[in-house]
Length: 437
Ligand code: GLC
Image (cartoon, rainbow, N blue to C red):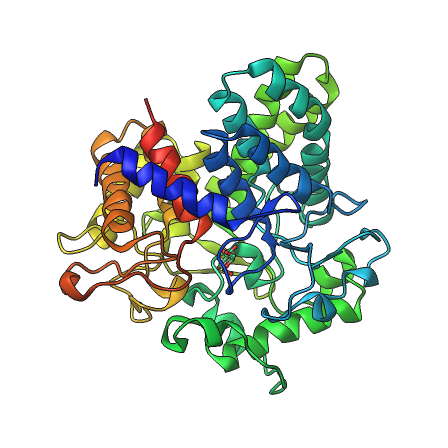
């Protein structure tokens, strides 16, 4: 399909998912609210053709920020019982600093807003207009970074933890499997809604959900108190993707504060945090025998020796030196980039747990591809970058703007997209891919 048609189709998806209240749902039926990192990618897409909507997207997310700087992973702008777990389950009001005017979840997602704000600025024709917008929003994002470093970097090493798999964005990755073995949650009674919209073979199992629910029950028992969660959560992980995004967003905030002028103290703070984060991500999360960055299980004090698409995300924030970056690229191409595979599987195609249909256990996701593409470009790995971009575009063009895709080309005639249809970030990032000069 010619680029222009694909862009037009993508714009239609975004406009159709846009809601009157000024935010965009990830996908009709399956995800009826506003999700944090989705919103960031969506704003990038809108910025190319409707900056007002891009700004509203960010505004409505930040409008749900907690007084302690925390930004929740879901904002429940409307009542809708087609999603579980909804506002009544999450009960954000338990935390004294949660907003009173709106319900949210009490877990977060990767801190994309810093680099998203910079993207908006770079894309904008009217720079003054975006600068005015930034002036009002940037401190909120800064406060979010302060929250992460003050509450979630418990060893003061520049690496922040996540306490729930949903915080990673890569919900049911095999990376968490061994953590589930350390837990023995009750069999909760709940009514899954996702499996009424999507084939259950493409979603996590009910037993997996028991674990997800159990951690939130624990957090609620402590009224979402960070200190107590850090002490007691069975899930406490330093995720290379989450931390790379934080570092990349620090970088953007520094650059934007410089453009805005003043703000010396904030720049100094972000710089010092970033320096420490860069050292630690390399020292603690890079594994030279595997040639990839690994997750670190803080609760059980060990790294998790599994390779997934997040393992390459430090390219996005410039963490590896050139030699390590080359090694990462080799691991990526050798393990994930065999001839009959689209880049980039969410989980190691050579791994026992790889499942090409199941959510974050194998399928290709467009947002991770976009992050890896930008990371590869940063190191001038042009060929691999081009391949990942072309693979992404081929998938959405042939199969539609689905939530995720089968990485295998073997049966490609029967291949179809999986999960939610007309999925916002698949559309938004297609626009960004195709708008590149
Ligand atoms: C799923 C994805 C998560 C995303 C959400 C909304 O839970 O795993 O990353 O933010 O859907 O699209």
